[in-house]
Every structure is written in structure tokens, then in C-alpha cells.
Length: 439
Image: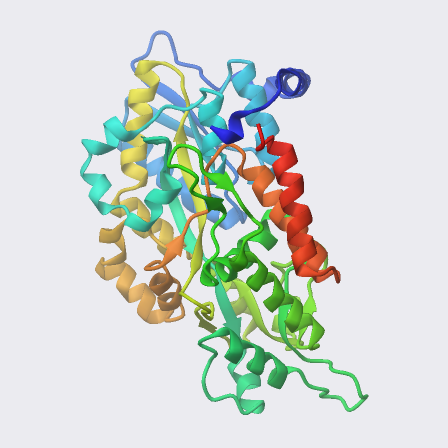
């Protein structure tokens, strides 16, 4: 696999770093795999980064329900920070032989965990489970790699464009943009000088400045819509990462044009998820997802949602997290699979969706009376549900972090004024060198 070509020196360095971090995490890790010797109850730990805190409360309630109905298994959820903070702790646990039983994290780490031989493939269990037919087929892209299923989806979502209908009406826009030309036209019309000082104080859209995963996540729908792919299929076994592609260039040029024309503003660095300017009416459109609904409802502003406008095809990118079964012991793994069966089932998924705003990964849950009633009361969810019909997942290969980092650097450089073609070329050269693709 092209992404597994790490040098021995790098591997040794990772082990040294992991061992150092291990010394600072012994208190957390020491109890991760305790099974009471004189008890039939198996106590399993589940590491997660569920946020905000009210969502953790929902998860705890659902976990408590499982524990009450499965006296032989007790799940202990442990919050260990946000996904981007978790990997050093996960690596430490793997190296130190103190991994949790279950792990909640973004699916893009699957390739690396599989490469480290830290997780169990799940296809044998899932093929026998009725739950497999209930999982949204679009999400299997985030589960499968190298002929194996490495995780199951815990919750999903995607990003669309929130907009302010009152600002659209004031600008004379009667229909939301369906394509990129209309998006640029709308952004120009929504950019206005409302206080008469000769400078625009309202802009059409805010774009995420930065090179982190949030920026990449909000940009990828445009790349996919322009026909871009992150890999060239040299052969089914050896896909070649190719972020310098026509679709990526078109997406960068779109964002660059919006800035050049003055109809877009940039977020604070690596803070593109903040809604302050949107709520204040300083921008009329923002790319974000259904997790923002509670904040927008509390703000009491007017808002609506549109799908990401298309160039060559409709596109959206799946967000959310998956659950991984860590390698422990046959007895513990069998018990953990019972919890996975519960977590991807209709009952759990409906309750989780109603309590958090995430989309259910379970099709029976989406069709349930309780969830359909919820959608009736929150109609903007229909856009995100509709986008699941054409949603794509980010790659789960072991080197995705390098792929994302270099795509992010190309986006950031473009937004700061570099020619998009040059930014992509430099990013591809860095990626090729890092991954040693030429050998």
C-alpha cells in the first residue's frame, strides 16, 4: 500500500514519542481493560470525544440503558478530548498494550489503525447481522478498505450552505443558487454597503481560512462537484494520490474568484465553524452542518439551508464518527460486538438523532414515525437527508492525514493570494515527496 511506506526511523520515532506520552497517561490507561476476576460481568471501556457536553449526556443515557439490559456487560464511556487530540493517546495505548475495548473517532484513521494491527475487521460479524442491511449504503465507503470492514458508523451528517432569507429578499434574490454561476451572482448581489460609508459591511459568503481538516471538509464538496477525485486509479491495488487535478483546480478557482470579486470574506484562521458573522448578518451564506441548529434556534434569527451548488455533479461529504473494535481478547471482543449491534440499531440511532441533531445512520430509524415527526418540526434537515443520496466519504487510507494536510495547504495558500494552479502543483510535489511515490 502506497501509504504504508514509512521509514524505520520514523516508526522508531513514533514509538519513542508514544512511550513518552504513555508516562503521562498511566492513570487513564491503567483501568482500561479491567475484568473482575470473580465476576461474570465484563467491563469494557469506550474512548470518545463526543461534544458538546449535552451530546455526551445523551450518549451516557443510552449507554446506561444498554448496561441495564445487559447485566453481563458494562460499558464505561471515557471522554479523552476531541478527535484531533486523541491520536497520541491512542498510539500510546496501542504501544503500551492498554488500548480501550471500543474507540469512537473519525473514520479517516481506519487505515492507520489497521496498519498498526490495532483493530479487528468486522465483516464476518456484520455479514451475519441484520443490521448490515439497515446501514445507509453511502456510508460503506467510510467502512471498507483492502477487502475488510474496519468500523461501523456511529453518527453521520454533511455540510450544506446556510443562508439568511431576509438578506436574500432584500437583495432581490428569488431563488437559491443551483450552480456555481448562480452562486457567484448571488454572492455579488448580497455584498452591500448597508451603512453608507463606502465600504461593504455585508458579504455574500464566508470561506474557511486555514489548512486544517475543517477547511478541507468544507472545500471537498466543491472539488467532487467539479469532477475531481483524490486518487488516480493506476490499478485497484495501488491508487495514486492526486490532489493536483482539474476538479481541485476548479474548486480553488471558485473560492479565489469569490474573494477577488469582493463577495466573500475569510474566517479567522482555523475558525471557519464559528457563526458570529452569519448570526450578526455580516455574511449571508455559510458552509456548515446540522450540528449548528441548536445555536441558530437560540439566536432567533431567520435561516434556511440549500444544497451545495453543483458544477458537473451534485456533491456532499459525509461527516460524523465511527466505532472501532480494538484488538483485546476473544471474550472482550465478543462482548463489545453486542454493544456495536445496539449502537447501530434503530432504537439507539433514533434516540441519538432526536437528542443531538445528527442524522441516523440506520435507514429504519430515518423512516420511523418518531424521526419523521422530528423532521416535520425541523424541515431544514431535509436538505441534509437529501444530500445523503449523493454523499461521499473522505478516504480512510493510512496516509489520509498527509493527503488532507497538503490539500489544506493548497487551499490556504490560494485564499491568501497564491495562484491556485501554483498552489496545487506545490502541494502535489510535497505530497509525492512525503509519500515517496516515485519508488
